[in-house]
Image 1 (cartoon, rainbow, N blue to C red):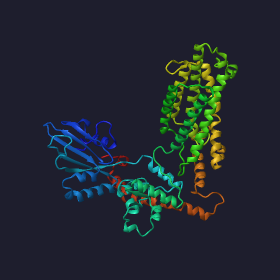
Image 2 (cartoon, rainbow, N blue to C red):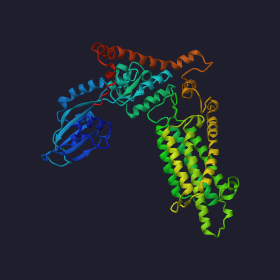
Image 3 (cartoon, helix red, strand yellow):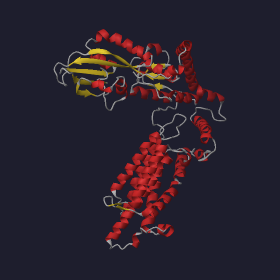
Image 4 (cartoon, rainbow, N blue to C red):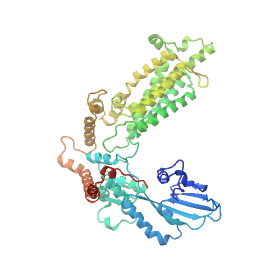
Length: 550
């Protein structure tokens, strides 16, 4: 029944897990005709399928959040206690619950309410954490960071997940701390102190999440919330601001100073190639911050504006040199694009020159704009932090397309004409030269705002090294030490020992609770299972590697 209330195409993780339990996914629709499918939505929190059986009778089956399905059941009062007992038993083992119900629809129309709902049962679902979550949390605790779990699941699920991840299990339901009725068992201590000492919070709503962070910040703690992609977010924001300033200001100056209209379709092409490249940053090898980070909006905005303005000026300078002078033809022996060398009465010659200028400007803008991501993604020198393969591949492919278009294409729709490989090489050389100044500009802006950017410039980083993994472990350890000192997580040389102990107390307590939880688990559960397996001669590897989804 649960498989019938699941999608066979465009499945989410739950639908996929349920349908995958069938010998053949087609069995989910075997012998029935689908009439209407209600997809999951945050309001109803359930899916439903209305269908006709082989006798032409209409039925409806639904699966979803237990409370929602239980509210549908005609005999809710009779089964409610038993259902909650099963849900709690699942939750204690770290399993989520999914309820299933069924009804007949005698009216025979998909809009009709149908007969009474029958509660069929509950399905346990195991949603395992990421494979590297436990190691990440362990490293965070070693760095002096107190990690707290904030989840919308039940308290029992949160505690079991925390145990699996090597965290402490000192967790509270957020409604008991921050709701209208505070639990009397935990009302002895102030709420702020309980939040500070907790390892996590369950049943969290958005307003509770905000309140937890607000209270921790009020107690002078640096708070950071992490999830997929947060390491890339600042780089993307700086890049977005820079590109916006660069495109708008650059083409505005060209239009104002020389009345040069850049073909709009080429702006669209730049955007398409840029977006294709930037999408790959989600798989990039960005070096994460080793301590809780924050949105440095002033730095992001200032860096983006300055870098964008610099690139806009370099485009204007390039256009002036190509359009008003013979600098490039004189030094690189390429065809002149100087407007003064053309008979202005020869409209064909003027059109050809304008189209070639458009091609040259397009390549110059496209290449350096996309190369900017390598600067914004790195905290130090961009050439010392190797980008991910996908990002590098996307950049090379996009610029190969841009170079081919500029060198060879004759495209009347876009009003561009090929400039040849000579000009293409000159533009690449010009962009390499102006790229070299992007890192110093980035450091200058950061130094002007914080005064600490010089450490990034003088940090002992090299592009090539005979050390294992480019000396990654040593450099990361040094970076982590500096950042922990910077954020008050570790005492700097010369600080008082008492202050250092006070700042690290909260993180040490969290680490101690995590170790106690781990030892308790080994003693009570894992140790017993492994001892029994050894006595019976079972393979421990097969036992430890089992994963269940439903």
